[in-house]
Length: 636
Ligand SMILES: [Zn+2]
Image (cartoon, rainbow, N blue to C red; front, side, top):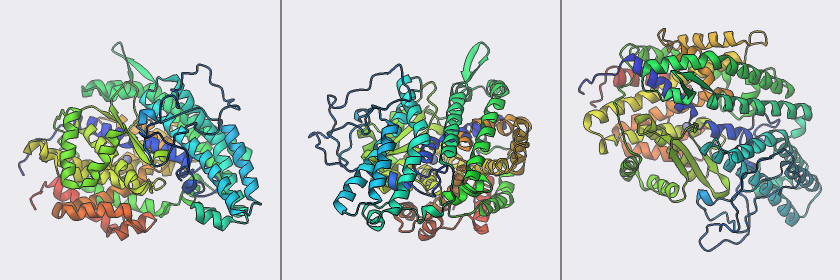
């Protein structure tokens, strides 16, 4: 392969730090959301409401012939200037007589109305009490259906409010809706759902309910340590408020640089690397300490929740309550293997650059045309899912001021994903779109089976980035294609040290005692972790020493970053297969969606892939980096 000039370290760092940011934002709100509805780590019963909440809501209502809900049935919500927490009179369901689970409506026609969290949780409690004594199956069916509908509608409203408030963060109505649903989920709905599952356990027909409705009823809720419900509710509310404060501060806070106001995301978009560096430093001077203080409070609150639930520390609680198929010790060992086998190979690239970063400028419609051409070569299913997203308005790609989130979320009610990206015609935008489409594809094809399995869900996004990169030549010239293929591979490889950095940071932070938890110590810790993974650069100290406060995952979803590490190591194995046999690689990708196994490590084994925790796997990745990135021998 012809040697091509690589970009300078300066531009490289800018790009790297950007890709870190967008990379980490991908799906973060999805995961944030999962916290509330999927695998709720703050909930007392491990894995409790997951399968229950994700059930589609049953309904026998009529549908219009077009399947589109008419606007007379679903009035557009009017902005409501005074929103209080008191919604005692609001309905408990989405009022939508034409709803049918079999008919998808376009996103803009999806109905919405305000719900009363108080009435929903009270009704859930009543239903739970009734189910403790009811033996008649017909009555039981009615009651459980009603409970599913209550939670399903809350779930749906929450999803919709989140998407709308992300589409336009200046919209007060949707922000208030989102805040209400989030806060009351924590303080009321999550607790009522847990109590409901406890009631199911005590039902004389528990077995029938579990089988008929596919609800995972906890084995023995009474064996759970007793906890103070009120204390938990208080801590959960605190957590919710801290996360809200964080989200507002990180997205809305500005500095004045050369007379202009900049948000953090606008600073990231600065094309002049020197201006970027200066403005970023200025922004961090002001907001690093404030955001770090929020992080400290989050660590303390989560630790308090873990103790309340009978665990020594938060990591212990997290790994025990979230159905991980590995332990914190295994995770630490894997990070050690990365340091041993991956980091030294990458260090070879430190002075010459990790990517080529050729400038590309692709209008969205051209990108879509090219993507469809690529999908034509990769199989009908990809095209089919993309068509559905287009037809029903299920993605938003427009970059707007304050729109910061890039993620995919599943709308259970209609069994479709919604994709949010900020397309800016550059390579990073292209990769982000493909990444999120990988999530959409998996969610649509599998009915969102990996909703609560972060290790699995990031496989589909990262692998698709690599598989589509094989078809860059359908749009770009040969030189650009080679550079972009290099960059696509490099960025997935960089995920290993890049994301392990955050996991390492979090493991240490959650092990600190209250006195050790200071802004200064956390910034110092970030630097130490960066040095261990050879990511630290004297010329750009902020990239790791202070910039950690802008990475939402570590605030919202502790240890989530580690799943990028495990999934990247799977993605790289599939990429390796695609080098000699694309068809087999695509079959492996689909096998991961349809596998009969249920836990991460079993599923990848079933698909014929190696566990990331095997020493050999990291050695293999070290060899990939050496061959394709250091020596650039792409020939055979
Ligand atoms: Zn993702």
